[in-house]
Structures are given as structure tokens and as C-alpha cells.
Amino acid sequence: MLKQLAFIALLLIVAAAVSPAQQTPSSPQVTVIRAGRLVDVDVGRVLTSQMLLLRGGKIEAMGENLPVPAGATVIDLSKMTVLPGLLDCHTHLADLGDAEPLLVLQKSAVESAYAVIPNARVTLLAGFTTVRDVGVYRAFNDVALRDAIAKGIVIGPRMFVAGAYITISEGAGAMTGLAPDIQLPWDLHFGEANSPWEVRQRVRQLAHRGADHIKILSTGAVLTHGSNPKSIEFTPEELQAAVDEARNFGLRVEAHAHAAEGIKNAIRAGVASIEHATLIDDEGIALAKEHGTYLDMDIYDEECIQDTAKKSKPPADFLEHDRDLGDIQRRNFTKAVRAGVKMSFGTDAGVCPHGINARQFAYMVKYGMTPMQAIQSATSNAADLLGKSNLLGSLQPGRYADIIAVSGNPLEDIRLLENVKFVMKEGRIYKQEP
Ligand SMILES: [Zn+2]
Image (cartoon, rainbow, N blue to C red):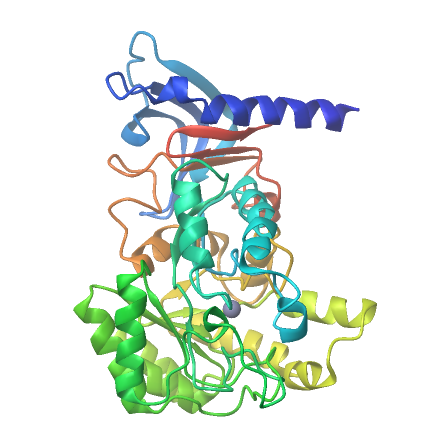
């Protein structure tokens, strides 16, 4: 019953949050938040008794004794720890989490688009106010979801999207496993490219159709039929073409890469981040440090893959790929943290259910980060990776009022982030629990 009441209260809050009455442009809403503790991720310390002054979706001031303007709404979080809204740099919100072509083909693009709406909602309510969504099988479903959220039609985090995967034919980002005489609809193989010039063509098309960044698959994958995480897929020339062409449009590139050579090829080509980085070797770690490349290592989702394996029977070739890779990736994560490589927070949400993204924090701490480093990976570092440090990832004036709170001190118990009590995105409250 209590749960039901809380849910109704939440609905009312959400309804109030999206009510058009608050959107009068002439008088931006002024809100003051009283924070018991506040995590200042830019300098890596926890401040006490802080106040945040918010105006029109942005943070205007932060300090100990700010004057409260007349008519301001005051939110009392004095018993909580306030943090910047979290960013997950590796999600798949706009996909149904299934690479099985025969299942994907049972739904139209429109059905898929409606079916992913809850993914966005649970992610935001878990405290993730921004995501970098790194690929969809149905090309441009992510662009549509991003825009629907931005317009307030769908509740979810601010999204930065890839539009599609750029992949070799039959590669890690392709719908594989079909008979050769089956022709897929255009949007299920949009990102296939097999030469530097085809890669450039895809980048141009994606940029023109609304992609915020480019996702390229440098090596084989775990969860794709006929693909092998240890194999190289794109050549250095093709990776270079992706980075150069993306740069012409002001876009950054992230490379999916498990195999050591594929990781190094992508770093040398100048990608902004390596996704997974599973089999990175010492040379790769040194290269990432030298080039300032982020490693976006999804070290929790192995738990979900093994869990699913116990409950159902995933295809044998997927599990074969996955065996041992989870452990190696976690050991390499520790090495990279110790070496001082830039690290961002990316979970590959969609492999695990959406909304449990924060479970990865405890693993990052277990495998070598301080709690503050883990929080920075999902705030200031993530915003830097997106090239949006001026707007996201910290509670400094001028940033979006993307604010979350937890009860207790997450620097002492990082798992508190798995139970976020308060969520605000751009000044609007989406969740507020005692
Ligand atoms: Zn992924």
C-alpha cells in the first residue's frame, strides 16, 4: 500500500513536473535546494550545508549562505547527499536488447519504438539524467527517442545518440545469423560499410540525420552470431576515415573494441573512447594515456550475462565468447585505473536490465577506484568525454540543474547510488522520496 501511495505521489510529481503551466518563458522558475552534503566532483571533495540556486533549468549559484529570492521554491535535502545527475556513457535505450534477428523481425519499427519507452523512464528515475546511447539495430530509433524526450513527450534522460552502428557486413554491429537469401529492411543494416569511403559515406549520412556522435565497431563482439571478440573487423584506414569524417561534422567517435590490436588501432586513429576495452594490453594502456582516450569499461554486466545463462539457455556461441572475458576485463580495468588512464562510466545497459546502471559503481570500487573516482567517472569525466563539461557533470553555476540525492554518504557506501531518492533534470523534479 505504502508503495502504491509512493507511486501515486510519484505520478503526481511527474505530472506536475511536465505541466505546461511551469513553462512560461517570461518568468523562469526559481528554486533553492538546501543540501546537507554536496559532492563537488570538480575538486573531489564533499561540502556540507550548501545551497543551490536554480533558475530556468540551470544552476545559477552554489554556496553556503545564499539569499533565498522572494517566491522561490525551497527543496529541503538537508538530510541527504546531493550530487550532479549521473551520466551513463554506454547505453542502448532505444533497442529492445535483442540481437536475435528472428525476434527483432517480429516487431515493426513503430512497435519497437513504443516498447523502449520504459527503458528511458527507469533510467532517469535511477538518477541517470544523461546517457550516451551507443547504437541501435533499428537505425534512427535513438534519434526519435532523444527528440521525444527533449520535447517532453516521453520521460527519460537527455540522450546523445549514434543513429546506427557502423560495422562491417556480418560484423559485430550487423544483424547476423540469417540465411544469405534473406534481405533485411534498410534500417536493420543501415550502418554497414566495407571501405574507408563507405565509412565516410555512413558518417555523413548519420551526421545529416541527427547523430550526436559516431559508433564504430573495431573488433568482433560477444553477443553477435558468427562474430568473435578476439577478431579485428575494421582496418586502421577505415577507423581513420571514421574519425576524420566525424571531425568534419564536429562529432566524436567511440569504438567498440575487445581485442588488443583493435583497441590500439582505434586509439591511434583518434577515437574519443574505447568501449569494453576487454583485452587491452600494456601497450594499449600506455597509448590510451598518451592520447587522452577514455576507457568506457562495462565491468558489471558479466553478472547479468551469467545470471541469464542460469535461467535460460543463451546461444552457446555467446557464452563461449563470454567465458573468461569478464575476469580479464576486470583485471585490465584495475591496471588502467592504476596507470591513470581517463575512465568514464558505461554499463552497456540493455545487456543488464535498464535502470540498474548504478550497480556498476560498487564493482568499480571493488576493482580499484576510490568512491570519488567512481562518481567522477559518471559525472565530470563523462561530461568531458561528451565534450559538454560546460553544461553537464557538475554542480557549478551555468550547468543544467541535473541534480540527484541519496540518503547517507555515498563516499562511505557507494551502493547508496543504487537507491536514488531525488531526481531533477533541467530544473524539473521527476522523483522525490523521503
Ligand atoms: Zn553496447
